[in-house]
Length: 311
Image (tube, rainbow, N blue to C red; front, top):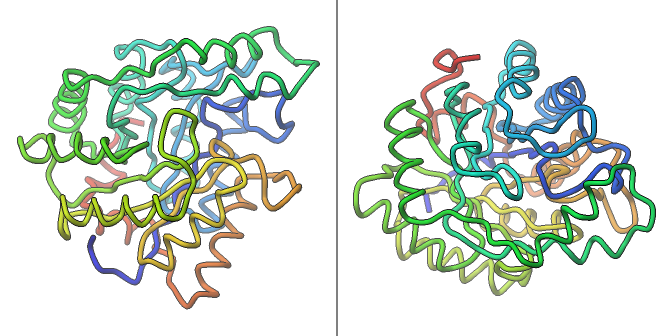
């Protein structure tokens, strides 16, 4: 991993995992997503990771039109790097998942490193009353659903977004094998350094939220990629802050946000994405580490710049 005293904070403000019933603070409408993103940037996030939702019912949507309702507002009101999902939501085709990134030509997108089980179905048992009919069915469907990202799909993303738009990636690795999938892309020239690996812990179907797993993922990445990469982590739910703190101590970067956790602390629901960013920033600075600015993150990751996007 590259040696640096700068910690990049990414904030994933809404995602496609949690549903409106789970938190009244989850950003849903374009205005809410824009305001949450701007506040997170002001709190210290260098990168904002974005999904879109149908403003009428909060269901994840790949519609580029919805993305375009908040992307320009974010760009006009803060300097953060905008990172758009290519993972989308359950049941979306690859064409649907790529529609908004291809329309927006962002500096970064997320990039899942393989097909996998993605189990959210256990959350369906935690609530009796739902705000919208789609929520419970959406969660339960993940018991018999595979997130698809084949090697063909991954090569296509590299060509269409990487080569076609100069977009770089947040490589989301949910297990050790995903690091080897990334190594395949690097070895064949689809991916060029420096790049950002996002280790993801605690999703049912991926690697578990155990500290030994974090150490092993880091050592495996070091062996495969040398100093060509930066390593960030996110951890689902209650593991969020502890895992981020550990990775920062180990010289890595962090991702927080309501896509990954709805909590600020034990038993305490977060009222905003900005509150999570402010907390991890305080922890980082209390450890005598420095938080990267958006422009420092751009330089570290070799991004094309906010003036070269299409929104």
